[in-house]
Image (cartoon, rainbow, N blue to C red; front, side):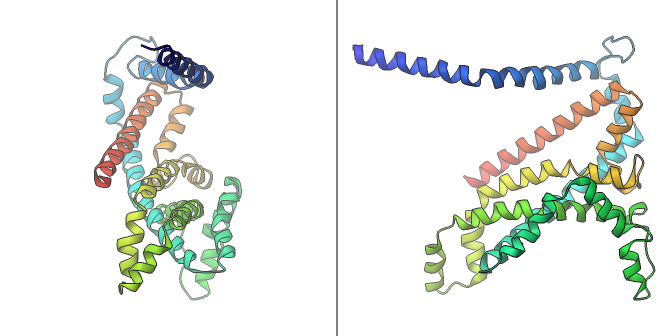
Length: 290
């Protein structure tokens, strides 16, 4: 091996070690504040909350048989499979429409405005709108339509879906707009010369070029769907209508009761489901992309 090659090899090794030392502080933080607590949670989920003795899967069977857990899982899954597709599709359609509007900046600001509103202010807004004596019922009464107790009936679920879509529409729309702007205009011009219409351009040019962004936006929407608990909790309290009793409500009530074993089991199950969903979606999307 020549001196030049040996020198290049040493420089590569030195560069690799420098990179490792640069990420070492973040790696230590990841291990200390994420990995070790996760391992401790797994240990607690397999142990007695009183004696700390190993109990195997007893805590898991106890949680799986819990009626509140079953209700929370059902509602959380129902919420995710309802609101995420609605958000992804509606934000894409809005982005496509706004892209064609030359002076659409004010409309874009209008869709982004909900992101700047604090959660506490959103809660006050929903209470004013959906309260039995609130704005929406007063408006319906003008047309002779009887009002509804929106947050204490099955309607609460759709109020929560609306809140989630309204809050996250602007962010997803901006991501779609950035992806749409990256599509070469020449592709559309060539398609129109060949006689393609708007629908053909959308189906055969726009959608294929947005596939990579679709995965990112869907994952972000999925993550944000777990944050909707704040609005539901502040509006409806610890024990809301059964249609919006989510996993986060259950965890909060277990925390107040100091049921650490159940909390640990719930955290492990929640993390496992979330990781499997993301991994499965990523693998499936990777195969489609190929």
